Image (cartoon, rainbow, N blue to C red):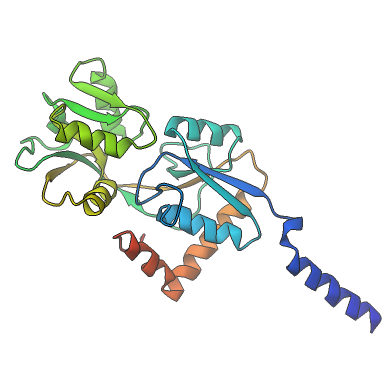
Length: 253
């Protein structure tokens, strides 16, 4: 009888003290709303899902913004836990959840009535184009950028708030077009009252967007499993639909 009481007590102590196995997990990325945004009440749906999944397992989540290239390099080197908004196509050395966390569709964004006649990457020909200098969009897009990067009409931009900087270049008339994800530009339009200002021309094909965990952490597969389980639980309960609606999105599948 005594041994049973002790085992129950030990189990309760373990449940009451998750910090014994908990870690501080570092998530990094540049601002790319609605996937990940400024830290705060609306940090982006990927950050919210990851924070719920990891904190419920007793971990402390530290999410901050930094330049994207640096975030990927630090994740691959094991200096941070994960890069938010990464994809296996862009960063194959990282470890990803198996549940879908969304899709990204790259667009050529122009002012209303200024959409190019061409389709695909051919639509970029002859235009002054601003793009994320350290971004991976899709193979055909990045191949075009690499081939024409030295031309004065191609403007590479860096920074933690890249989308806002790209849009300002476009609205100020300094470029003819910018390259950006459809969900990202839609979110900026809706939250900044810019409806009806832009035309979109699809570039490339849709690709998956996810959270890339460092392979240098022996618990990375555990973190991935926590995220997968949380996505499934949130979808079943309807919590996922409510979360995505707050960011103007539908389901992730």
